[in-house]
Each structure stands twice: as structure tokens, then as C-alpha cells.
Amino acid sequence: MKSSADNEPTAALEQRLGHHFGDPDLLTLALSHSSAGTAGDNERLEFLGDRVLGVVIAEKLYADFPNEDEGGLAVRLNAMVRRDACAKVARQVELAPHILMASSESSSGGREKNGILAGACEAVIAALYLDGGMAAAKAFILKYWQDMFADCLPDLRDAKTVLQEWAQSGALPDRPQPKYRLKHRSGPDHAPLFMVEVDVPGCESETGEGPTKRAAEQAAARAMLVRLGLWT
Image (cartoon, rainbow, N blue to C red; front, top):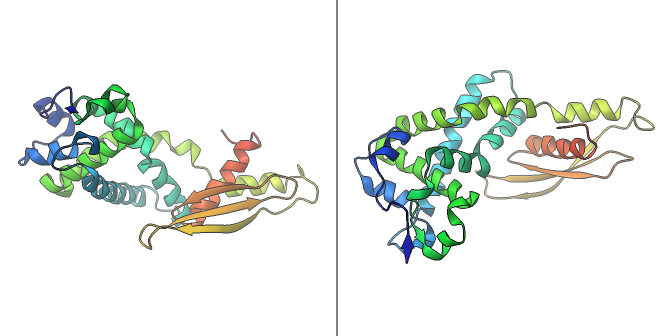
């Protein structure tokens, strides 16, 4: 049996989304979790919405940070499109009461699960895109992600530089140079995922992941700095 606090998306929800749907079935589908047992679920829309979100965020980052290299832009992009960010927006928009899901899923706390909320948010972005074009999706994304652009900036320093400066500051014997090694590459060519290991003599190695080698190197450097108490 499916469960929703409000099976039909309301005008108030559309107002929060900033768009009146010409095809309301699109929004209903975007809010249909796979457990609901309906004719369709939101997983395909989630796939599309993730790509639309990435394009909009990447375009804004490209415009806002003209001096940032690819690795730096990739780190910023990851921070903006991660599951927790999408779940945060879902809570702001109050999607949870409108998500169609099995009663068992709902009773086990499904409406509070980041994965379900994030998936619904991405699916809604796709529905906005299909019903109102890129303009509708972009307006929604820029409105609800604007605070995150500012919030994530303090944590986006060049971790590789910080780690190198620390390692060569005299804190370690022989002032070693951090060394980065690609451990693994997965995913399709259009959306690869790299895992990189950083090694500093005298320290336990750390790994990091990212959509580019540079982004993975930054993630690995940050992980080591966090463990050393040099990064907050």
C-alpha cells in the first residue's frame, strides 16, 4: 500500500518550486518512490535531474570563479551536488509529505532518509526541466542553492598546497614532498570516479575520491589534513 500525507501535489508546493505544471503528472511521477507500487517511479527522472543540476551548478561556478582551475571547480561542484545538499533542499521545499511511498517505508522513517529526499529533489528538478525548460529548472536551483555557494567556500582552500607547506615546514624530518598515486578509476567515460592515495613519509597514507584526478588529490590531501588536526 502506498502512503503520502498529500497524494496530489498542491498549489503551495508549486509556489515553492516556482513553477505551475502544465503536466501535473510529471510532478506526481517525480514524487513517486520505487516502493510506492505505482505504474512508474522517479528513478529515471532522478538520473536526468542529477545531470541538469550539474550543468546549472557548473555553469555558475565557471562564471563566478574565472581563475579557478579544473580541479578546484570540480571540488566545488562536488560540494554542491552531493546527496546531503539535495536532501537539504528537499527539506526546505517540504517535499517529504508529498512523496508517494509504501506505508512500510514511511513508517520506518523513509521521509527523513537523505537518499529518498535527495532522489526526490533531483527528480523534481528533472520534472521542472521537462515541463518548463531549462529556465524553470535553473531558477529553482539558483534560488535554493544560493546559500550553499557561500557556505562551502571556507572549506575549499587548496588542500594540496596546505599539506605541502606543512610537510616542508620542518614539522617532519627531511621535509618530505607529498606523493599522489592513482589507485582506482571507475564509472563511465562521461562520469568517471577517481581514487587517489597520498603518501607523506612519517604519516599514515590517506585516500580521496573525485570526478577528476585533481579533485581526488585534493580530497586525499584534505583527509590527511583532517586526521592531522590541520583542517576543519
